[in-house]
Image (cartoon, rainbow, N blue to C red):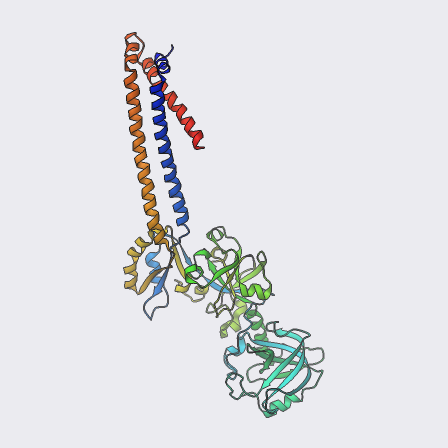
Length: 518
């Protein structure tokens, strides 16, 4: 059956066109406001993710050293995205010497001090003597002499100063070059004995370097209260099973471990470590990228090294490092204690793992001299880290190695309000790294509020426009509907005749609007 209402609309199209145009305009405004609302909110949230709320715990009381209580209080809060409890341990890279080559000899006279046996400035080597004479800076020969040698075999120590085949100078000062005090192991008889060393003969020496005197190394006893040298056969054979060499042999092994030792630090996200934030103005990325959250979640074997290591040892982005992890007695990244020196071979040590260098960072920590290597926390087995060596059920958490990140920086104020006073009562202070997030969210709130109002207004306008169009349309064609019903046309068919044109024209308008928006 033909639709008489459609014919009526075609005979008088002006009213229908005007209603369609009105509906089209209002719908277009509504879609634009809806699109604007979702795009603005999406982009604000995306940009807001760059404003990370990174929190730390500060200790207020002098007798506190760790933040275990504070961590326990905030642990599990729904506002926290993750906590970064950074672990650290000794890492050994066989054949790769660390860049800590300028560490000075702190103790020159107290030979019983631990520094005597573990200090990185030491060198143990065999060499052929070429000659000996008064040092240019000494007033008399008994104030100091120099021994010229050719290095035969470097047994321990950095290769930066002592290299096989190189000519070297061993200084024998009678007094400390640091404070001028008399050396207990240098006297006139000792100097006479050293001047009598046979040329072209092979000797065993132990020396140390000082950053102020890089062109020579200074002599010291082979072991505490021991001789300054040992004459060897031409083949350089040393019977290390001889009990007198037990201490020197131990020192050689320890020094060779320490010169290839690194400070391994784990992180769940290097991008949120406080010292790497721009506002802290301490450390920064120089090349490549930092370890991110995905690296930790996916257990990626990647690492970020220090620029000193990269420059001094020629390490580049993409290079692979075979790192072996080790627990030490006190968690230090060098073997320093008496127990370390005696028992390090029995310490828990991991199998070597290959880590790819993905970033080079500029770290200015004067204590570590570029030995830091950052790795994802998930790549270090749980049994490694400083606190696993303390015999504690609950690990001590140092504030320098602990931070947390909120899921949404917009919640920072709420988090502070919730925990500031309870933490202060326990002797701690809650501190967030400055990130300018508050200013961003204050501006973003007004923008989000404005787009929400526009969305609501145009939604209401669209609804009212639809009601108006339906009212005008139905009012204009109710007579045709009544006639159809009088002629006996079923109610369902008459209703379809009335609504079908409206649906059809609305669909055409929507299609046109869709292509215009596209």
